[in-house]
Length: 154
Image (tube, rainbow, N blue to C red; front, side, top):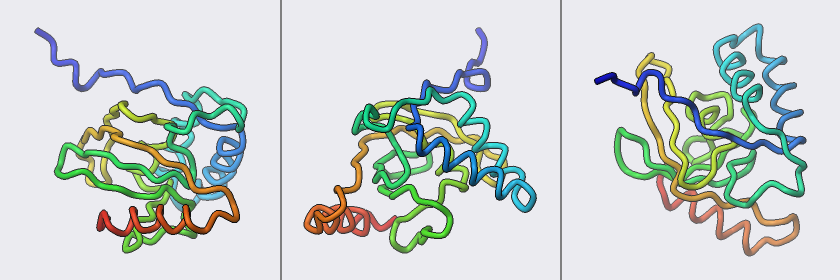
């Protein structure tokens, strides 16, 4: 019997047009100083189905999404996926340029993906839930999302 863990196909992902454009620009910008992160992000962008911003389902991980996932290494974690300048692990804000950030983009609740950590080890994570940031001006919802993220201790 074959071991399919190494050859397992990556799940289908969807990325909004605006996220695709911004992330493509980011990957190009960091290519010289961080080629591994750039290459990984570009590979995910190339395999993604690009969709109109207004038609991205709420359960798809986008930039700014708060994601609860279960890694194969332990308990469920909740993080917010952000651009590098906004990353702050103490606040649960993880950069898209980290291996786990790149693995999460475009996934939806219920999907799993294999990803390679910086130490070269293969891991799997499963997305348990996704929430989107509140529309601008809705401070109550933004506060609730921030509380959820901080409460998780990620």
